[in-house]
Image (cartoon, rainbow, N blue to C red; front, side, top):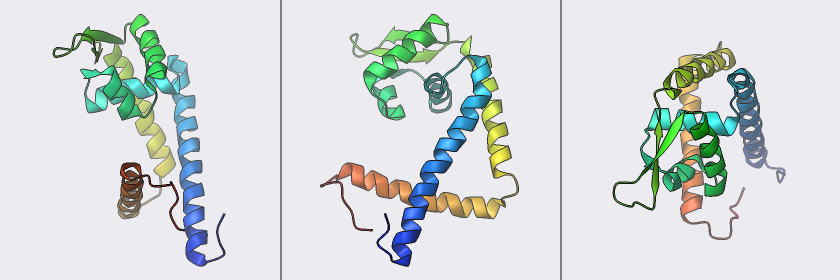
Amino acid sequence: MPDGSSLAETRWQLGVAIAQIARRWRARLDQRIAPFGLTEARWLVLLSLARRGDGITQKDLAARLRIEAPTLVRTLDWLEAQGFVERRAAPRDRRAKTIHLTEAARPLVRRIEAEAAAVRGEILAGIAEEELALCLGVLHRVAEGLARMEEDPADGHRPG
């Protein structure tokens, strides 16, 4: 809760707004992608592999998605059973597995991308590109602040 100062109130409102927007945005996207038979966990894996490259280890993919490895394993099991991903022995460490999108997944990923673009367009309609760029710049700085805290968590508390 804010301490009564204007800056503290603004920071508090920003934190609440970011959390609520992220939750509502994801729920809207989830609603649009649900007819494809995918949960959020599943479509996030597919998009991550498509956008940022596949052929990475399960461990690295879990870190990229910021989820626990056992959670990812269950998701990958389902995606593999559906023919959307395949696991291969890692070239340098045969104990590790790398994750690859299959050709069967590519049309599905294109459909997910199309729905995601439509949702973005609907949500951001009427907001000028300059305003979006300004907002994005601020959000990048917020993300940098989070990254610094993750590097040096101290006691987890920061002023204001």
